[in-house]
Image (cartoon, rainbow, N blue to C red; front, side):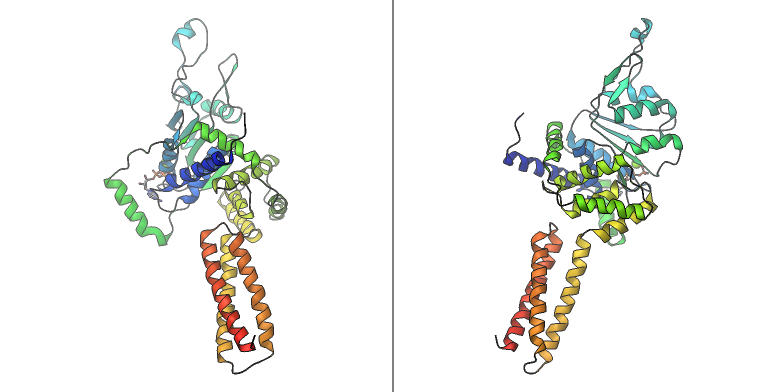
Length: 385
Ligand SMILES: Nc1ncnc2c1ncn2[C@@H]1O[C@H](COP(=O)(O)OP(=O)(O)OP(=O)(O)O)[C@@H](O)[C@H]1O
Ligand SMILES: [Mg+2]
């Protein structure tokens, strides 16, 4: 097959971003969750959203499946769910002939995208079949392996499973995302959104992404330039290890894939340090580890928060300097040192503005750049340049 042209690559990247936007649209504060679900879909991996009741986990998973034009299966698992309900009933006619065949029509073995609510209710009767569908993409019908088309399983749960028999299932999810309740500053928006949905339940959305596009996006993973992140990633694994957080070799390898996918979701074929942040939905196995992993990531990476803090500090320095210069009468030799310092700072701010992919950071950097230019002009006048 020929490589996609640059215009079709751009269309694919736009389609991925459109999916994220459309998925999160009816919800308040669910952009990150939408990105994780999109990442799972582009990766061809599975994801579980874990969080307290009523945080829109099921609603998001359902909407994601509705937005993809794919063979779809959804089910709410209980402790009492029987294998037939997921994998299809046994074919009675075949059984009379001594054959053990399932009628899989419209069941999980025929689905490309599946949504299984409360996945860790899986009983031992269904667990093994579920594991082989998720990992090897096969189902055993008693005689042979049958390939299944499952691409991504989206699941939800209130808790991390503690039962030893569920650990293999938990490990099958590359993206394990912890959903936080909406923060206080968005409660008004939340009330309005829920109010709107209560009285005008939204129509199921029209699909905006086809499985073909999903497969093409998946192929793009191998074109992502990872040269700017690999060394940093190795360093982060080492720092995590120092903090007692061991990343299994499987997850180490897959971490790189998650980073490449994150850059695709952000509309780029070149991974930047910020893309490594997706590891906070890949590495931690529980909330305690999440806190620790986040501390390490924020510390090691040039996150928007870090840039904003640096810019705020430069802005403070500029404000103090301006007051000081205005209060001074006449020329002082140290004004020349000031000039050099602020010219260097202006270059630093310009570099931030040019390199960031975050709109808030860029806007802030441009503001600070203007402030710096104003102070520099003032200094030059005072010095008589
Ligand atoms: N962030 C949000 N933005 C908009 N609506 C929300 C938000 N959080 C919750 N809701 C509303 O609450 C409803 C309940 O969410 P949902 O049933 O998806 O929660 P859940 O996380 O799956 O809960 P449970 O763990 O009990 O299954 C949603 O359909 C939506 O109407
Ligand atoms: Mg739910």
